Image (tube, rainbow, N blue to C red):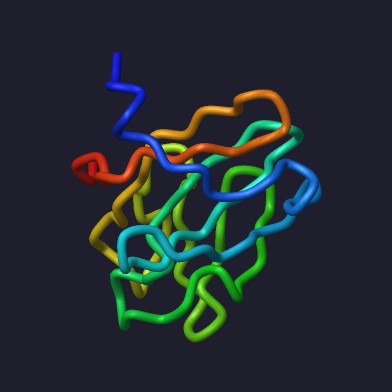
Length: 111
């Protein structure tokens, strides 16, 4: 289990409605927080295809789509799901504590 000190309060659950994405800055990096039916996920706000802003894309269940060229990624594990992206994106551990979303300040290795 991760050290509690590794986590940073990133947002309130009320800030991210179901099916929506909120971009926050964490230790100088943009992170896209995603709410999928009350479960929260955090991914780098950076498409592995062309560094596009994923947080501006559409969230459909567990898939986030880059608004530039349509690359899609699984927010649970960062896996690239379709071209033009072939590389995964970093993901971050998330904990919900009461009404707050906490994100581990270090990304997990991309899978």
